[in-house]
Length: 102
Image 1 (tube, helix red, strand yellow):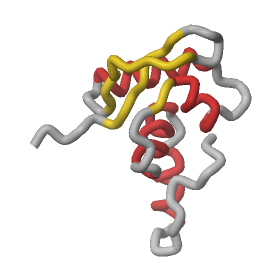
Image 2 (tube, helix red, strand yellow):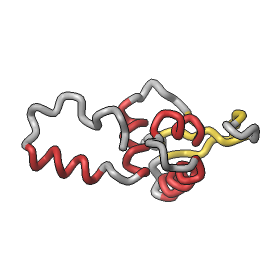
Image 3 (cartoon, one colour):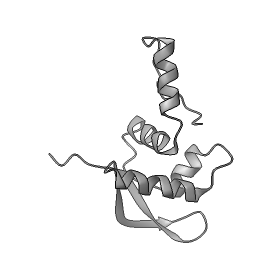
């Protein structure tokens, strides 16, 4: 699970609300969204970048790629045309939060 708490100032939530929030954030998609929304100054990241920041020791970088694809399918993130060198020496796409179209 993410080493950084999902809610930094949670003293105004009940224990039940805290538990519910933790459970809803257990999926990788939720962890990625929490990370990207918690740090809005991060404009774009690769799957390797996310893996470096969020893995707990057992996930493979491919599972982060799958999670990003799922989030793209849900219209929550965008896959950019821009690429960077990934952790295994191959180019990989950058991703960002979906921008509001309004």
